[in-house]
Length: 169
Image (cartoon, rainbow, N blue to C red):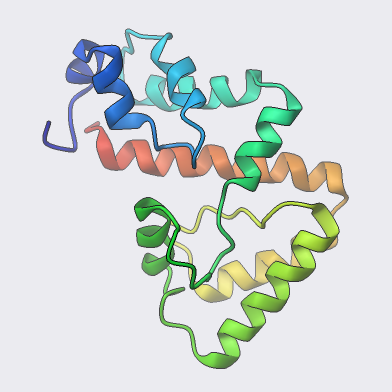
């Protein structure tokens, strides 16, 4: 199937083809796509996005935390991050940091993980390094529960961007 595809084509996919197309929308968490697939048929692209968010929001806390923890640190140089994450981070310039910028991201990633127990989640699509750093510093002051909910909101934004890349309006 050529991407982006149409909503009609998405509705016509078998379960395996749906998973092949959308199983990686939620970082290492295909259960989200499995739950969203059950909500077909979709009237439009917005309904696909809503189905993924609904699947996320309906999950238990442990599943949500596991999904959050499946995300890579921002500006990581690890080779094992998924292609979508690598492209999104590159789009924000996080693949071309100076040594000083990289050290700053590493320090913030470490401080954030130590404070909250999961990686900093930020839907970087359309953002700049400065936007991301400002959010990092602001959010370090949040309570753990506030930040858990903020991470889920950012995950839902990531779903939106990834689905918009795959499905025509």
